[in-house]
Image (cartoon, rainbow over all chains, first blue to last red; front, side, top):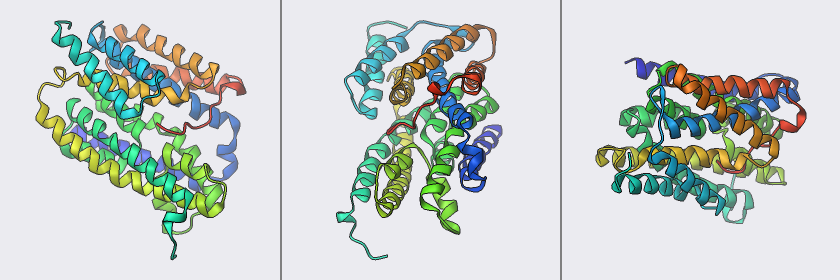
Length: 103
Length: 232
């Protein structure tokens, strides 16, 4: 039940954040510092999520097939593959290494 | 308003973006179920939260063993940029009455990029609305398809779905790394994450990185600002 609660909280907060842009005086959000903050937050969070999903195993660091998925995805992105292809390449790299016996 | 959308460049771009973006809803659906959420919870995230990055953030934290509050916090922080997008759309199109509230819900990276990518004011509106509503429809259908498929797959690790999550986050990040400053911020936050992982509960390293990123944004120079990415 508590998972449902946090899902609904996340949904309400997401909508109110979007709506905020339509309702607050324009000068609040045209402040370059706010625009810059929104940009750096997005980059920092996505970088953190990428790394945490690659090497975190609970509260420990672990090197496993996910690292190969990261490298394979980076190569696919460098070759300008579309999003879905990148995701499939990542899955294939991890699944392939596990077939070969890697953790 | 009677219009021929086949002659509208904004609507054309919007539709192609809607199909391309909607398709990868299938990866969100599958990864969300793999992270431990139910099919219903997965669908609610796509229907009501409806912001790809925030949705992936939520399940990324849950999948890593983080708490609900850590997941909701990461999701909320990643959605901050949508307030800036909302302001841009509002300044450009001035939606009135109920349209303003629908417009807010479909204010995401792709609809903003499609709308602002057009020069004619009418085409800007068409591009924004066709992309926004189109992605909403395709994204939700494909989320359900992915959730049902992911539920049937069994062991997520055997299929490399944890690797797919890593690839998805990197693909969301990639188009934003157009400047040296953006890459520097990404590296600093990645290193901060790795350093704190052994010392704090799962999910918290992502919030630590958010604090670091916010500090860089607040105190940093103007060069660190980044335009919204065309696709994510």
